[in-house]
Image (tube, rainbow, N blue to C red; front, top):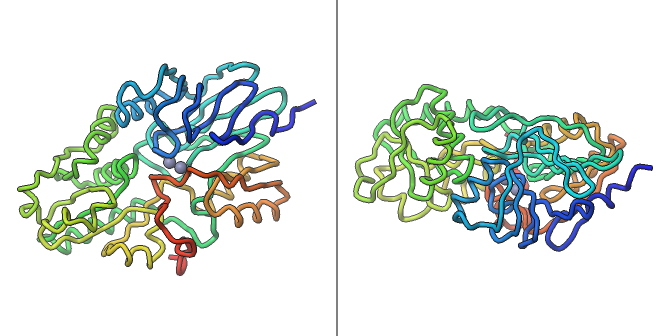
Length: 352
Ligand SMILES: [Zn+2]
Ligand SMILES: [Zn+2]
């Protein structure tokens, strides 16, 4: 008889736990054995005993936390099946950021896929999402409302370049998260033929260097030196979102502030952050991609970790798919979610 999914994977204080393999997935507290889906800080934390993740994710963790981020590490090759205790485990690409993976956990006739964070849109910085058929699909729902529709990221980057042409004297300061989004924006700028050096806030440097070593075409980048800021008219500068409103950004000549985030569809959010040029570029799935992915996996059951859980759970019900919210705490991507946002503030004013 097939085991019940909750025997294969249960929810503990530390996060999702697999008793048969004695490991946690993306635990929010230190554990003896952790399987990590990707390098964002809410999924990949320092201080675990053994860590199993893709080679890229392990290197990202080492860059962020230092080489001693765990006691021992093991690389998971994409597509290879590993046996841990009495379960089989397989990592598959998630299309979210460099090295990101879904983790399929299987025993007897039951397969659960923990997707971590994922998107279906093309991204020159990581492998595309792979559909893994499963019985239970575990998904986030950061943008789990029908009103969220992410446009083509390439078109958003073309809007940035159009603004650079329109205001050749002004510095374009683009806020983007340091892991993934920043490098995706750079690679998309290169795809659109932008060849000038891209200037980086110091906080983006180490991860961008890592992406370059991994072969991602980010092109020439230059760290912004304090004294140079007034001379960077006409240049594109990429910085952490928090720096857009900082004193740091005011030293540039007549800056145009941009922010690359799925949340930029929420116009109030852009205004509140003083963003002149909102770029709707998301590393998460929008509503259609969430629904399509759930259907593609053929899962009869869906667990929703966090985000706009209610709408997605309700939609599953209309499709005859059993679904439940996990209300998991500790997630909310550095990549996209904004912990400082007030509750009703998460809802978009209108669909773009
Ligand atoms: Zn993430
Ligand atoms: Zn996340």
